[in-house]
Image (cartoon, rainbow, N blue to C red; front, side, top):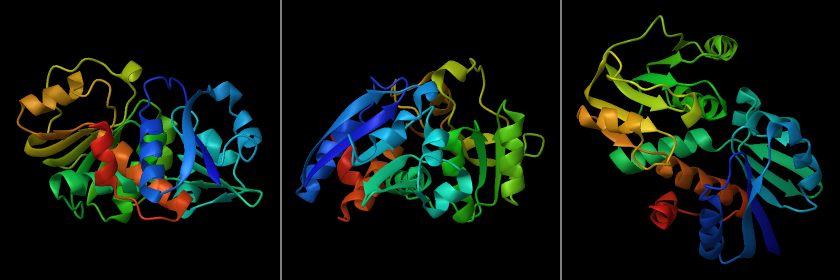
Length: 260
C-alpha cells in the first residue's frame, strides 16, 4: 500500500506536517506521500468526499477541526467529548476521527521539561479546537484547576459545564504553574506584562511555531519562565497520529528532530 496523506486547513503554506509524515513513513518502513491542502471552513464538506478517494489519512488544523468531526462515521473518545478532530483515517469504507492534540501536548511537556501535570494550576488562553483538545487531556491527567481566558463566552461556558475543575477568568488560582497560549496570531493583542500569578517557576507554552520565538513567548521568557513553542506538540501529536494510522510505534522525540 502507498499511503496518501496530507494536512488541511487555512492558512496552510507554513505547515511542517508533510515533513513529519514523510519521516514517519520512513521510520515505519512504509511508502507514501503527503501534501499541504488549503481548505477554508466554507469548503469543509469536501473532506468527506476526499477521504478514501484522494486520501487515506489527513491531519486537520484550523479552522476545520470542528467540521472534521461532523464528517466522520466513527469518533474516538476524546473527539466525542470535545467535538474536535485533528486526525482522519479512511479504512474499509469508514471515516474515523480522532483527536491527538491533547496527548501530544502532554507528551511534549514531559519530553521537554519532565513535567507531570497532576495538581498543577493552569491558565488557558483561547477556546478553539486546539484549546479543547489540550484542556481535555489536562483534565484527564488530573490537573488541579484550569482557568480559561477567551473572547467567545459560549465556548468558554461549554468548557466550564463539561468539566468540574475548569473555570472562567473570574476565578484564577495563584501562583500559575502552567500557562498555554492557543490563540492564533491574528487574534492576539500586544501585552506589556506577564499575567498576574505568573512567576519564574511558571512554564509558558505557545502552541504556534512561526515565528519560533513569538512576542508572547519572548515576554514570558524574559521573566525567567521556562518556555516552549508549538513544535513539540506538533511532533508528538504527529507521532500519535501515525501510530494510529500505521499501527507501528513512532517516537515523537525522533520526529521533533526533523523540524527543530
